Every structure is written in structure tokens, then in C-alpha cells.
Length: 270
Figure (cartoon, rainbow, N blue to C red):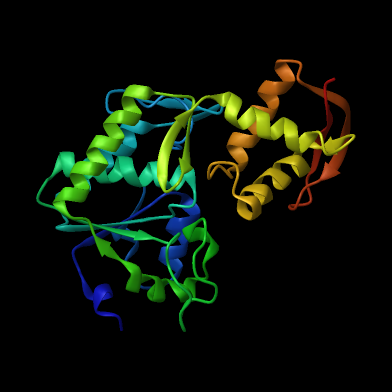
């Protein structure tokens, strides 16, 4: 077994319930040593994260205080933490910067490691190499990913802290990835690309457009690392309110679970 698995005092930090479940299913870690700290940090205001109770992002309420308080409480039980993320995904990358900054602020004696799945290479244990999310891997590949763990140096922590403080000060609508760094932009950055994609169709199912936008980022890489369904759906609805997208009609369709849902068929407003 990989020596890195034998560490009995390492907290695994992931960005999402799916990623949490994946590490659990790998049978390499005890469930009590895994924590999901997803905060959807690539969209919305972030200048008051450490003082607010909840954060409303894309019409989703996130209990920020509860998550941070839980992290502070359990950190006392660990001397090492490992942050799993992908630098190819803007949400993941923002998550990594904030969590590394926060942990160092809480306890400067904790050793922080990063595992960036956006930079892993294909090996005998990893079928395809880098992905935009930890959740893209099979549970049997997790042990192979541990080979790419890297400890964060004090100098890197200083750079991470500086980067987060800059993002806090800018407090923009969106935070994208560009040339390996996080950049603050406004909603127009994403809205422009949504309307560009929509203009390729006379009309299209709203959920199909979301899928196309996600695929566009993963193939053309021109969406700044934004490929989340929640963000795309939110901005499409905002563009409908702004009269830039028109609902042509509403159709009833079955989703993957077999449930019948009302789906907007939309087109770009002239």
C-alpha cells in the first residue's frame, strides 16, 4: 500500500459531496477524516466570507459559518491536511486558494499538502491523466493520484495568502482561471459566451444549452475554467430577465430519473 495512505493524522479536504463520496468509496480513508468544504467561490461576493452566516450564490444558500466552524473544530485533531482540487476548474481553484489560506490562518503549524488532479499524468494506475474534477476519477484510481501530492512551502503559503487577499479586495462577480492564475471578471464575461453559444441554434432546450456550455469549456477551454451547471443555469435565467434570451415555449420532458419536468425552449433575442 502507498506509504502516504498510512498517515493516521491527515485530514482530506474536498470540494463537493460527490468528491467526498468518491474518497469514501475508495476505502483508503476513514469517513471521519474527510470533509467537504464546497463554498462555490468562483461566483459572487467573497469579501466577507469569514464573518457571515450564510452566502446566497446563484440562488443557492450556503451555510459558510457552519462549514468554517466545523473545519476550525476538527483541525485540532490533525497535524496534516491534504486539499484535493483541479486547477483546470475555476471553482476548484478558488476553493484551494481560500482553504489553504484559511487553514494557515487558523493554525500555522499544520502541514498543508495539495493534490491538483488538473496536473496529474497518465500512469499504470491512472487511465487518462489530468481531469477538471476529482469526481471524474474511478475509486480505484485514487491510490494512484496520491503519487502527485505536493507539500505547500511557507513561500507558497505567502503567495496564496497574497492572492486570496487580492481577490477579496476585488470582490468581483466571477473569478476565472487564466494562464494558470485566478482572474476577477464581471458577469459580462460569461454572458457573452452564453449568448454566443445560443446564437448557434434557432432554438434549443435550456438544459441542452447548459450541457453544450460545459462541453465547450472542456474541449475549447475558452470559458475561464467555468463549467458548473449551477452557474450556467443561473446566468441563463438572468439573461431571460434582462430580455436578452426569449422563452419560445415550455415543453414537458423526462429527466434522467424519469421525472417529468417543464423545460424552457429558448432563443437569442434579436
